[in-house]
Amino acid sequence: MTTERDQLQRSLNTKTKERDQLQSSLSTMTTERDQLQRSLNTKTKERDQLQSSLSTMTTERNKLQKNLNTQTTEKNQLQQSLTTKTKERDQLQNSLKVITAERDQLKNSLNSRTKEKDQVQNILNTMTTERDQLKTRLRFYEKPCPEGWWKFDGSCYYLSSTKDTGGASQRACRAMDAEDVIINSREEQLFIHGLKKNVWIGMFKKDTEWKWVDSTTVTSTYWMPGEPSSQDGINCVEITQAASDPLKSWRVVSCGTNTFSVCEKKAS
Image (cartoon, rainbow, N blue to C red; front, side, top):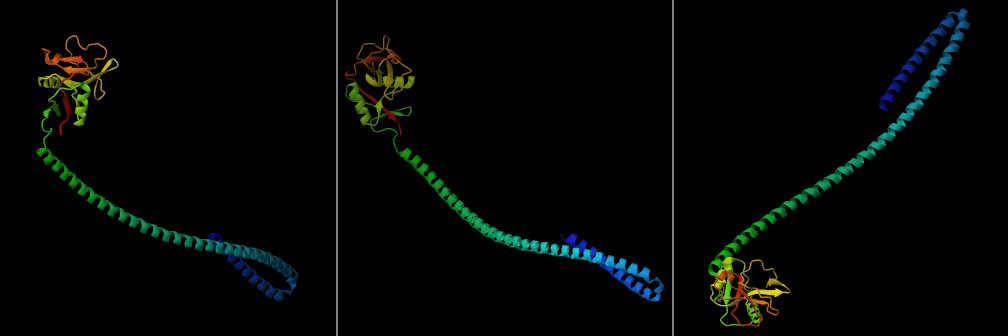
């Protein structure tokens, strides 16, 4: 816009200069008219031509003035828009400063919380280490099994001093937070048989399938030859000393039979 305005201004200056030159020529011709009366008609005609040119120049000047006024109005409007945009920019800059300050405060708060969290985590780690050390020391002083129980391969075993039925045996074991023994390995079978007593094991028949008292299916078995019996109503199992082979010493007996109990629970 400014470039166009400058160009128009230069054009106006040029036209004005031309007009001034023409005016000078007119003055010169007027002088010549006085001097050359004989050429009056010719000079008059030239004067009229110059007058016409002057009118044309005036019209052009007026147009240029109108254009200049329009350009000035547009410039003022642009200036007003620029002022408005400048105010908006300043407001945005102020908002940005406020948000930046809030962000920095949040960063500082986050850093403080992170330090506090790390301190708490360090305290927790220290306390966890101390707890584990105390547990280790406590295990050193604690016995893995209660008084009167035997420890074998991570479990504690209790052999009853009296005989009882299968149901009574189970209740007695549970009263001690234990269960009738579950045989999980060949070594455990040999250990229980080595107690030299006929004892209940935690095994029963459900429908046609043998289960342990924890409801798992029996997989490894140590039946005597001819066992298990298929006689109805005989659903409990004991390890008997009557067997010549300790790895073939299970037999099915009535749950109402009286025999010794072996209770089992995890060692401390």
